[in-house]
Amino acid sequence: MSSPTEAGDDAEIITASLYDPERFAAVFDRHAPHIQRYLARRLGGQIADDLVAETFLIAFGKRGRYNPSYPNARPWLYGIATHLVGQHRREEVREYRLRAALGPPVDQACHAEQVAAQVTAQAMNELLAAALASLAQGDRDVLVLIAWEDLSYEEVAAALGIPVGTVRSRLSRARKKVRVKLGHSEYALIEEVSNHG
Image (cartoon, rainbow, N blue to C red; front, side):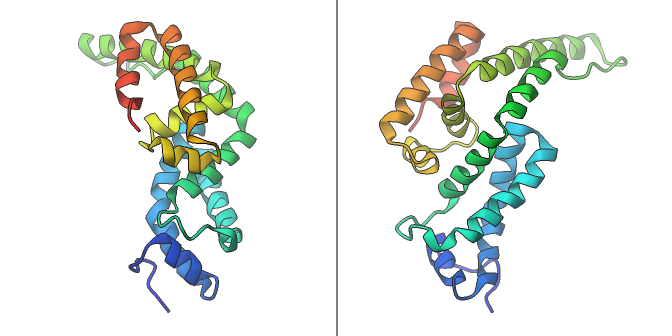
């Protein structure tokens, strides 16, 4: 029996797990923290915990259909996770709107500079949450996979099962909408983060 931290690329491990299912644990060990972070950013921590488990359960069940020409399984896992986010779309939009309405909690005992920083952060969070909530699901998926998860256009295309050209057009559309919501100066940070691929 192999260790969950075994060497080899993901494709080799997934293929081997067809005959030795315990080997799939190495894929979980390698990628669960990334998928957890992605899902927590999209839906919040409580739902993320459930969906991480569901993501890997689905991946385990579909491992026989994994394309071994892809040595890194992370885009495939992001695709499964993104599909699960899509199933929770209403909750996701509601969560963004709730975050925009509530903002970060204000500490009564903080200094004036901390209060000013929190007010500025709250205003930016409200704008960003509203901007994300206003995007179509496909555009939002592309934007967050590139900006938050640092995936390339090709990896996003593989994760979502869409052509690279569609990734580019969705990202362009999302950037325009976010630019309008945030204003040009605040948008520069998002543009810098997501302008790669």
